[in-house]
Structures are given as C-alpha cells and as structure tokens.
Amino acid sequence: MIHVVLFGPPGCGKGTQAKILKKKFGFIHLSTGVMFRHHIKCKTNLGKIVHYYLNQGLLVPDHITINMLNVEIKKNISSRGIIYDGYPRTKNQVSSLEKILKEKSLGKIDVIFYFSIEKSLLINRLLNRGKITYRDDDTDLITVQRRIEEYNKETACIWNEEKWKNIIVNVTATSSIKNVSLFIENKIMNFF
Ligand code: AMP
Image (cartoon, rainbow, N blue to C red):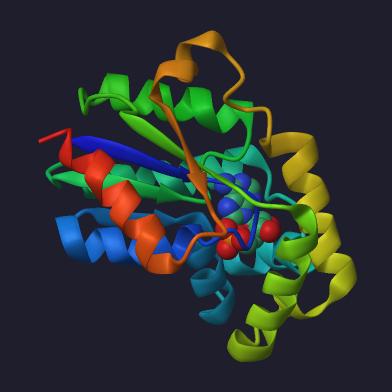
C-alpha cells in the first residue's frame, strides 16, 4: 500500500491534484478539509465542534483531527494507496500517522510532494476560489490570511527532521495543472 502526502499552503493546488491522482491510480483520497466541511454541512456533533475553527481559519485541535483521520485509514486498509491532502499539518499529526501505519502494518509514508508557491499568489488564488465555491473560509481576506499564518506557524516546519529529506519531492505549484499532474504521476510510477 502506497502512502502519498500532498503538502503545501492552502490554495497551492493539492486538492485538484489529489482528485486527478485518485482517478489515475485508483487511490483513496483523504482530505481532512473535505471531511470537516461535510460534517459541518450535515450538522453532525463533530461538525458543530469544528465549525468555529474552520470559520476562523484556525487549525482544528489535533485529537479531533487525528481520530477522524485514523477512522478513515482503518476503513481503507485494503486499498492500493492513500493520498493525504491537507494532512498531516502538525508534528503531532505526523507522528500519529507514522504510528497507525506501523500498528496496522500498512507500510510507511512513501513520498511527500511539497508544493511551493509565493504567498502573494496564494491570497488571490484563495479569494478567486471563494468566488466560485462559496467556501466561507476562502471569501474573507482576514480568514485567508490567518490560514496562511497558521500554515507558516504550525505546518511549514513539520518535515524538517533529517529522515524526511530523502522522500520529499519539490513541486512548482505555479506550473499548469497538467504539468504538475504529469510530474507527480511520473514519480509515483516509480513505486510500481
Ligand atoms: P483545507 O480544505 O485543507 O484548506 O482545510 C480547511 C480547514 O479545515 C483548515 O483551515 C482547518 O481549519 C481545518 N483542517 C483541515 N485539515 C486539518 C488538519 N490536518 N489539522 C487541523 N485542521 C485542519
């Protein structure tokens, strides 16, 4: 089972690429953002709790996010591969992911695609996406800025341990959707 992490700031194109890869390779796509928005829409108990964090552009506390993600991993233990989109976002989430993969003998994180893009481009991309998708957290400038701050503060450094260096692949997120997906697909082919 292959574990592919798509990593980068909000608005860098992870979600778009995850959908393409899911179709191409038949992998499971786990997006914590999509899961949270689904809970909010369906007004579940979890949705009521996390609503505040998403609206503010803050990270949802680790214990909630980790539990939710682990349930999904356990549901998909016989899949060919999993694409993680928006997870992990903290060091705790990284170690929890390593732990559950080990406990369930599901392999390890195989590759981390690290999307890089200038901050000034991100804000416009997010605000434009908000106009199309009506995502509350994409339409308000303050929330958008807070999400980028959260990324810089909590998330950007999570792979700084030496052991990840060999599996990080840098992606130029400003290339076209097609070029980015071809680049990623080629790298993933090496795992078969
Ligand atoms: P996204 O769709 O990935 O941009 O996520 C939208 C929002 O969901 C984020 O701004 C956070 O409030 C929350 N969220 C998504 N993934 C995580 C995560 N791994 N850890 C904490 N909060 C998350």
